Image (tube, rainbow, N blue to C red; front, side):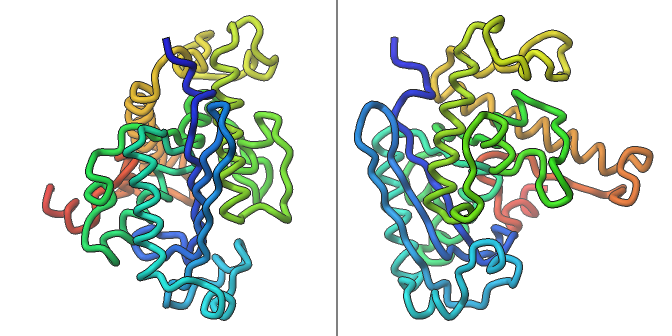
Amino acid sequence: MSAPWHVQRMAALDFESSGKDPETARIVSCALILVGGSLATDTRTWLVNPGIAQEPGAIAVHKLTDEHLAEHGTPAEQAVPEIAKSVAEVVAGGVPLVGHNLGGYDLNLLDRECRRHLGDSLEGIVRQPLTRVIDTMTLDRHAAPYRKRVSETQGPYQMRTTAETYGLPWDEAAAHGAEYDALQSARAAYRIGAIAHTRPEDRPAWVHQLRNRRGPYDRFNDLAFVDVEELHRRQVVWAREDAASYQAWLRNPAKAGEKHDPKAVIDGTWPLRLVPAESSEDQ
């Protein structure tokens, strides 16, 4: 029997980008880091000149100005093919991709950049469907639901919150750099998996205090003793369920309050969403 998924070799992937919407944002930095599996860590990073002006909010987060990227970054038309090739090699080697909000943002960002610069989808470039993705945000939301915001500026499932929940140190000065965030996501995946593979009665006290939809059932059990492909399939379901739940919440005026939107539509496809044109054609 193979080793549990959380101690196997992983490829941690993270991007910093020019904006919040993966449909229009461009990559400005990338880290792809092979970790674990009792092998040496292998790190590749890219600094990318996207060729467009970034949103001020994005610069405020990652501190990479347009001027800095123009002077020091590799042009996107050169960097994106290099990144895509490296990801394709990882996928071909059967190494799982791991990241925080990887299926909600990063892989979709890369998919759109592949279409933009290479004329093909990400799965077209890697020549197979993505079936070995580990998204620590999806895992954390499922295993530890209903977490409240830490503060007005720190959400319940953002990278820092997940890291701190699972006992990882956090360096805010280094955060929001692709290399730091990628490594933290791999470390979080290991911590989440370690709890899942610990006997329920021996799990941390905070786990026993969690509220969940199944009464006393510990949802970390859903992450234990499955291979990466099955874990991937379960995340597909969990992401879809989370999206449906959030959509229902937004459409409920009593619950959503000022955020109420009777026509809200939350896309729950994971880890790659259809591009808007394809989505319209399917309706």
